[in-house]
Every structure is written in structure tokens, then in C-alpha cells.
Length: 276
Image (cartoon, rainbow, N blue to C red; front, side, top):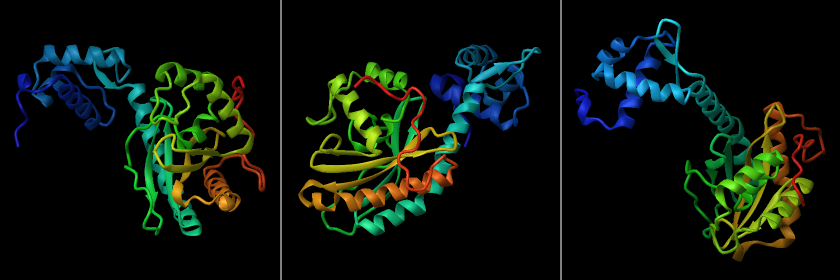
């Protein structure tokens, strides 16, 4: 299939074509005219788009005026590779947790650039009454156990940035939208090492989630059990929590986190404490 003409393509499509062309050269710097011929665009169009991408550090120009992949694009690729590695590492333990509890277990991953999370894996309960959540969809971290278990272990300045950026817009009528109340809840989660919410993210669902840490001791995601309120049994809370913490401790240990046997959560990230 032939490539659409220069004028027929949207600017975002042209930019993607340019980045794809740069990647195809394996990191070797490429000139504007060569890129124009490869992407079937006018040199003036290529030059204009490269200037925009360079300002965003997605491409960079060397002393000869040729272009290569920028550090920001490299950072994106490294971050995404880390997320996929986390999924592959964590999935066996997530399956084990779902089997032990017979509740739906979800693996959440956090993206520090967007300050959002997504579910990348779900292992469902065998109960006929259960929740099935959409995977690979960006979600806020201030609403529901699955987000709060991550947000609670972020440094205070990052927590505040999330509050300022989002305004804590409600996801449901139970979402905590008062910053002071949210700070108190985050402090409670840090102390006990897990989050427990009801209906904050999904109406009628109880969420029980605990964080995952990487080799730097930085929170990179979490595991969440989601249970319909009608079926949630408070007397089973301790058993569910123990299974959940065992799961995230094992995952974190496999990622090289400084996790000590019988200790949860690990030592907090410096400056993690926010106002209570």
C-alpha cells in the first residue's frame, strides 16, 4: 500500500512517520533531505516538524545538522519496557493471589510522567457476581484503592502535583475530593501498607490494594483485589490482607526491592510524608 501524500496526512501522522524513520536508522543521525525522501514529505515540512520534536527533546540534532532520537523518547521507551517487564514478573503471583482468595486480582502499573495508572493484567474470580474491568486504560491515582495504594508512597511534592493538576474531580460520589482528608487517608495507607476503599472508583465495589516497589525502593504499581460490596465479608479482611501483602512482597522482592521478611511496608521513600 502506498504512503498517503504529504498534504493528505495529519500533522501527528507526519510526526509519527518521522520518528519511525529515525528509529529505523538504528540511532544513526539522518539528514533532513534523507528523511524527506524516506517519508515522502517536503523538506520544509520535515524541518518544521523536527524543530517541534526537538523542542520536546524527542529528537536531537548533532553538530552536522543531522537528527537522531532524543533523550525524552529514549526515556519513554525505557519506561514502557519497565512496565511490560513488571507485568511479566508479577503475573504468576497475581494468578496465585486470585486462586488463594477466589477474588478478582488486578495488576496496576504507574507512569510517573503522566501521573496515571493502568491495569495491565486481570485474573478473575470464579464467582458469578464479580467485576470485569477494562485493561490498558489510563486511570487517576487519587480515587479508589488501586490508585491510593500507589499515591500514598509517592514523595509529597508528587502527591501535591497530582492534587493540583486534577483538582480531585470525583469519579463516583464516594471519591475523596478534599485535599486534607485525602492527605489523612494517604498517611493511614502508608502506616498500614495497604488501601481499603468502597465505591470510590467503581460504584458497589470494595477495593483492597497494596503497592509494588522496584529495586530503588520506588513504587511502580500495585495489586488490587476487587470484590462486590454485597459479597464482601469483613471477617475475611485479615486473611485477604495477608494474602495480598504476601503477593506484593514477593513481587517487590523479585524486582530487587529492599524488602525484609515479615516487614511491610518497606522503609518509606524519603520525603514521602505529607501533611496529615
